[in-house]
Length: 341
Image (cartoon, rainbow, N blue to C red; front, side):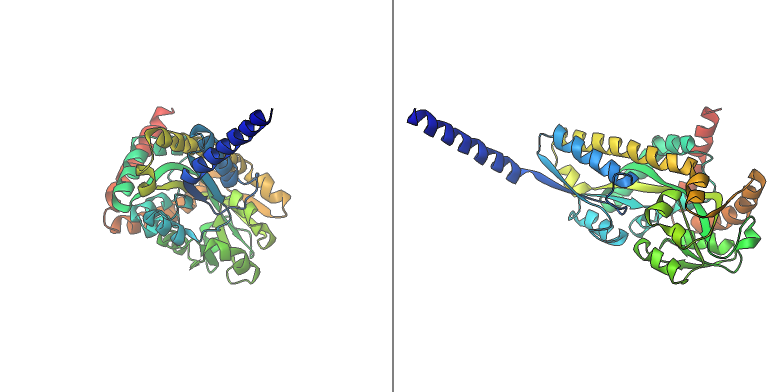
């Protein structure tokens, strides 16, 4: 009996040591994003699903650590970490990515995608794949999925906006990205590039009169507390990119690469679905939080398009390499739009 007990204890100890050895050998994947770590936030719900899938699919050979709410730094710091391999996966907004890959600015061209379905067809198709591979080759950062940062609208604390003329003279916060600066300046406003984490304070202190963002981000940072007026012009279909360090990815086994790829696909779908649902309910969501919401007619939106698109396109095409990418994107949009008719 004593021998059996000792044997059982030894066997349990060996199993414990074995489990510890596996844990010690596990590859750590640090996954960061910028939304609060709450289940109602698209980025975080997607991150949790990614973690569950990858850890299960790899039998624990990859351990996923989640860092929401900018815990590993702002966009520039995360992008640098991805290039160096000190961060394995980051979900980064379109305003930050041009600091390492300038062609990403093309997605700031206003009024390009007529709807979500067209955007998905373009980004998940040959154009999106070619663009991602070019980015990987030139930066060492692997773009594994495009997800929604939401349809961007203008908000302000000054007045109702129905026309481009209504915006003149305002001080407008934009992402730290020159393409958004050009967009705002084309409407006769002054642009202030302010990082996401500093935006609520800038609005509260009246450093700027307004900002432009999706309803998801407006809700995530409670920006409605400092903004009375919302104009649903939908000037840009904004992106979050699922970015993976190529150094990290190249060291994975084929099975681990498959698990990470599938995990990104699952996360991207959740991220898109949740953000799109909020986009489609923008008027009700913002109105319930005390904002005066102005929906524009197609003719009013076209007035914004005529002012902003030529100015932003001219700037984009003046940057080396961008003209070709703009042409390819617009051709892909045209192809996708015709296929849906």
